[in-house]
Image 1 (cartoon, helix red, strand yellow):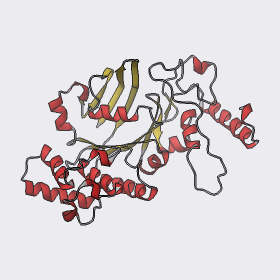
Image 2 (image 1 turned 60 degrees about the horizontal axis):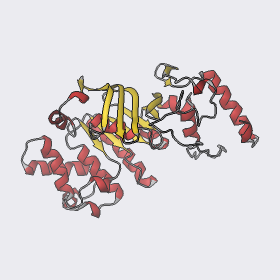
Image 3 (image 1 turned 135 degrees about the vertical axis):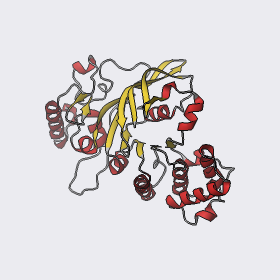
Image 4 (image 1 turned 30 degrees about the horizontal axis):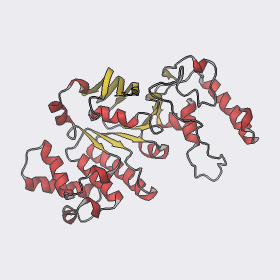
Length: 341
């Protein structure tokens, strides 16, 4: 349904060109859920906005690559053609519902606007469709809540309204950019469950973007791990969470709290800062922060290589070398002496 081929999204700034997305490729199939994870500044949101063609041009430009939606390259379409696709075929839920909803218009008006923009129908029919959508996303008493303003909803309910707006035209792909970031864990779980139920009902593909691996594990089937504008590991959820071969992904997993009582591993942060995307380091972009970096890593920029049928990793270490390095580090940590790693 969607194929991104060697996409490069660069941003021109007074200090130089920021390579926000630098050679990303992946495929989304109908009905599939794909999670994109990484630290802040890894290029996740720029990638999502590129698919929707929402990045301002200029300063954003695309020196290379294609974004093929049902065979059409979105990078080559005129704005008029893109408007027919945005919201209708590809919809997006943004990170902050309070800033995404217009505070001076009632929720029902904003929902009806999304419907009437793409479909010619009487307002009475659009209103009925809006009420059905609010009911689908779990808004109680939807007829009454149609006349409420955004500030009269809680954070979780505002997020449900945004999901309803995104579903207004039965899109084929739903992009959710950090949809649960500002919500507590209980509401977060409800929103994720809602997205699963909505996907089953409408049969759409979902791209969910998050820095939280726990969120990705709950909802995604496939995972793309981004670092420094690139995909450094991709595979099924099982590959990423149980058979990772990438030091960056492993480091992210070690910073994720676990609730099983038998686990006594302490949480470890990733030392250092993400690289400057104007002047990235030579070789592997992760090598200045990597606990297993070698001299080769400073010279050679690794490409994604196949580790299994659907598992790809951008690392110079083989799977055997990575497992051995990881074992040695864990042994040293148990002894409480991290200086010898």
